[in-house]
Length: 164
Image 1 (cartoon, rainbow, N blue to C red):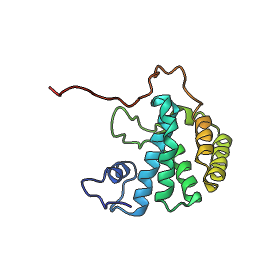
Image 2: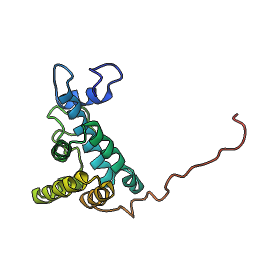
Image 3: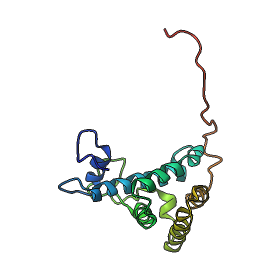
Image 4: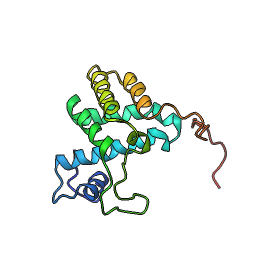
């Protein structure tokens, strides 16, 4: 799963800046998954256009498959993603020290709400119901952002003409 810190290994490099380690292991790859999941939660909370939420459950389904379809591990990674904060020595001014990577919407949730989300997620994922997971994800991320300013959903285009 992990490419053992080669130049092409973006996931491990990101994980190593947040979770410093000496060598890449499967545990490091899971740290990278936590960072990716935190970014997905942040994106679904309004950072990305609202139509993106339609496709994010497919990414989570891919993560679930990559970890051997282990529902408990999947939910543990989600729990870590909802609580992951930037390190004290923040990598940049865009990522202040101690900032919750999953975003403000997730930060505003109580422990009870997070627990309910994880319980419902475990139930949906164990049944293979990614449509149900999408509904749960929308709820936890604050619902659909209709007035976000993103009104155009991408659509296939046909370019006609010669390239200049």
